[in-house]
Length: 251
Image (cartoon, rainbow, N blue to C red; front, side, top):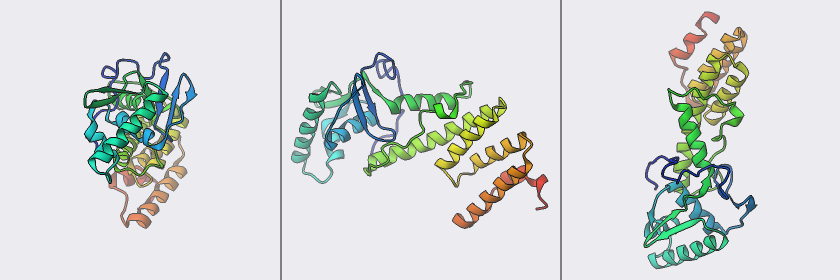
């Protein structure tokens, strides 16, 4: 299990993450991808898992910790051997990993899509920021390595999903205030697709419909969500959501 931490820290990453001059790129959102100067690098699965593990840790980690986490069912000696093999295969393709004694880390010059996505999400959550990208420009729009089933990936995947939905809701609220209703709707729907049973995106969608004068759409949205909650969880929407449409219904 990985410790909780901030994935995006430009100072700690040498200030080069996501810059145009970066030649080595690691993609973890949607699917695994490694490239050097735009050319795809083909790596065996053990090498992919090693790079992903180091990237998600974002710090120096002990070789024994890496080996024990990636090769759980092996003896210590076999796990250490598997790590050495994976490390050799990865660095044979390019300068991805730095070693210092018994410690390893991803080289600071490697641009990781997760880092840039988390940085943007944190800016969107900053109450002092007025950043309002279009929803399609939100970088954290895909799940982390969705086809991987490792526990250490699943934990980070869920954390990033929660970060995504909060960032999209904050963006939606800013777009709503700016009366960019179409983009606000897109952001709220993206948040709803991420967490279909979450009420806050539904509140935003209803607020958008009401701001546009579309009372019927607001009521339909409320009733559909109420039915979904009842069918899936056997519960009712909160009073806060119901109050938004109370003037549209006799309930």
